[in-house]
Length: 94
Image 1: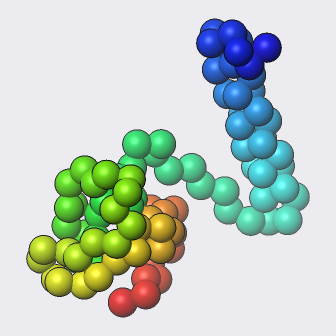
Image 2 (image 1 turned 90 degrees about the vertical axis):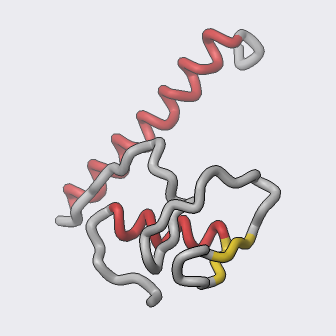
């Protein structure tokens, strides 16, 4: 079924939707807060120190230097920090 383009998208979306529903239920059960950030948030392209957007980067670029504050970022770690901040936490590494 995943070879059919129309069905594959519906099946994949349903899987993620079910996963999100389970997470929301667990968060409610244990008294945790569940937040959803925008799918299109440029988390790996925005500096987690100063907030400057560095522009679109190729996926092959794994590390980059901010032009404003000159801090070096690993793409994945920077995205994780930006997701944490977008989710409502004010703590960052710097």
